[in-house]
Length: 123
Image 1 (tube, rainbow, N blue to C red):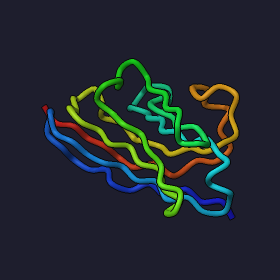
Image 2: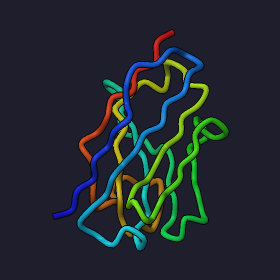
Image 3: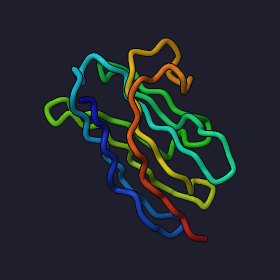
């Protein structure tokens, strides 16, 4: 059974940092693109960051570029999202996703999803 379990969300003050983790099981982790999406209340789920199967290629939404860093650790079957300089606009439920994708930003390309973890940034 494929599982993606996010952790690390919480409440943080503007300007602060959080690191999200996504523990994967049930598939060959090293052969899948991993990504983070987020969804704020009343908004569509949007792409945040992705990392290719080799770990050498990363992709970021313009809104987070320079502030967020995605990485993966193959031995632990885990993907991370380091979030710095957080602002209230980053408040959302963050979802981990996995898939053998054609377009890393396209939500429907991902086959597997976690349940999400809440990130709240106070002003």
